[in-house]
Amino acid sequence: MNSISYLKKIQRFERGATEDGCLYVVTDPEDIPAAKGLGAAFVYYSDITKKDAKESSYLDGVKYVLECEGGFDPEEFDDGFFENVYRRLKHIPLDIMETERCLLRETWIPDLDSFYEIYSDTSVTKYMEDLMERSEEEKYTENYRDLIYEMYGHGIWTVILKETGEIIGRAGLDERAGYDTPELGFLIGPKWQRKGYAEEVCRGILKWASENGIDKVMSITDPRNTASVNLLEKLGFSKREAFDDTRDIWIR
Image (cartoon, rainbow, N blue to C red; front, side, top):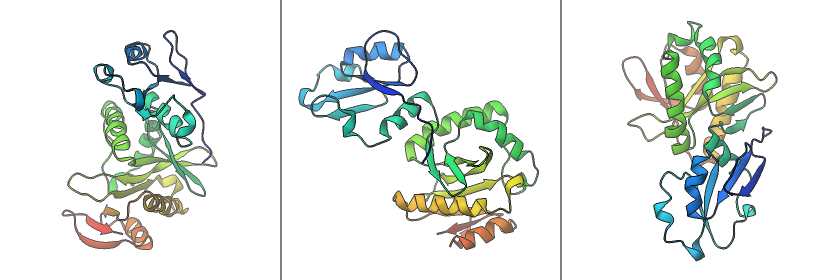
């Protein structure tokens, strides 16, 4: 996936000024308070062959702890690992996947302007809830990052048209309280409908789900929403049971 690299370098933490684009590696637990105080994006590296007894008193609130044998070597970790760690620490959304025409990435607050424009069309909220007031929606977006993206590794993502960079909708795998099966959700703004984007994006999501160990997906839709029903049938979903008075559960 062609994406921006926000991480420019990885270096051992030394007390002093920090810089953007740098992920710092703290190897002495006594340096952790200094790294926190400077607002550094950092990971703590613990040599398991030289376990430091004083570590536990410093680790509270440390988001990433790496444990290996010997000195720190970034080559021991998968490509992209530290880029994603840096983004998490700096609250920069992760890129998830590409389809032929679209890019899916995590949602962040700057996306909301586009969402409010899309949701301003009354056809969008005919079968789904509207967005909340701006302050509440921003709070929800922040919490969603911490409680869904970071906890489950998936969620509802932002859909971007690669050709223009426009945000054209939202789609992904959400978690619904009381259910163990991830829920496929999708919305393409009216301006971009009837161009096959919803099917393209949803097929990409289902492929991503299969590659990431998710073998069962559900979707919930109003039977009057014929466009969604037709798409679910095309994607191989089957209607199973009523979810509430107006919506049905579909399973694939």
